[in-house]
Length: 420
Ligand SMILES: C[S@@+](CC[C@H](N)C(=O)[O-])C[C@H]1O[C@@H](n2cnc3c(N)ncnc32)[C@H](O)[C@@H]1O
Image (cartoon, rainbow, N blue to C red):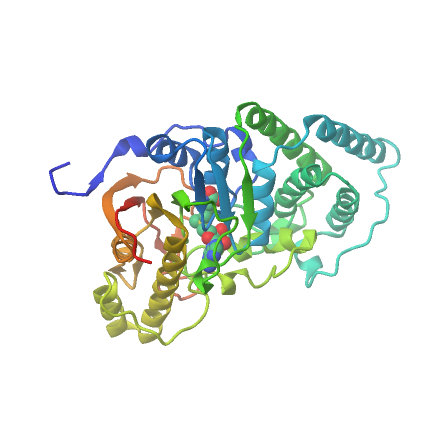
């Protein structure tokens, strides 16, 4: 890196052959997950044992798990209740003995069903729109039985652990197409032959996650973790608020609005509906950039890119602008709860819309600079294994796709002056 150049590529952050499924990181897939090794390396560099970490878009809780292993208390926020459930389960100090007793009872029940007459006991079917469009009658009966059984588990941490395996099972046994994050149904010719072994799939996930949680419990430090639905875009402030403020932010915000980048809500919808979580069909609208706005951002590092997009497509320019306006509002809320020497690490992608590159990394640096932070460095890494859709729709035309980015930026800034 040349002196004065604060942005550089560093392949040691690619973690090409790293195992990204250690500990509770194996629990559940999700689009655009952060890989644990990034959070781990950032914690080793900027973390303080006993301090507080904030992840304002925590998703499935990668940063929170790593903070627990490192020894920092952590708070995560996400508008998606399904990932809040996953992040909570991944970081909970579940009692292994209670978990094992419950899993053994469950196993006995499933064994009895399978080896007696194979008849699945009747259980109430949830009222989900178009249920038969996404699941076969047999699968619906199995899932309904499991759901009723799980809801009777009294220990909350154990129930959440089992629900997470149930959630992944729902997706896998549905007619959704493999490898798609959006809700697309598999072709008709495949549906007839699709007969998933619901209990078998569910059992394998439980056993995989049981290994993961044992490894996590062995290594986790005695720290607090809290996950909530706080939406910093709307000025809500994360809780609890540590005295003196949060010391470190490690986060990966969405790349853009859910409509044209990653549809987190569509990915989560079927599982969220089966579990009975709120707003299952509204997540993509609630997410950053999900609301239409007439606002066009001025004097910002993304302004000239937005002006170029505007020459091609006025509506797209407004959508893009709405996303960055939300990101700016969120940074404003976050800056209010950070300590006097806080470090922020934002993992962001610079995507293209209508062939125009949007410098999200520069937007983040500028927004934090205005709130008393100094830009330390931006590390550019290749994305060899981030679970991203290979294609997205930057033109916003159904079926018209372009390859998503292969690099991301880790923006690091430190507070040097207090602005409030
Ligand atoms: C890139 S993902 C985070 C993935 C996470 N780092 C992980 O490893 O699982 C971005 C997350 O931001 C969430 N999100 C979008 N808008 C939000 C908002 N206004 N407030 C909080 N979370 C939001 C989405 O639901 C999504 O889970």
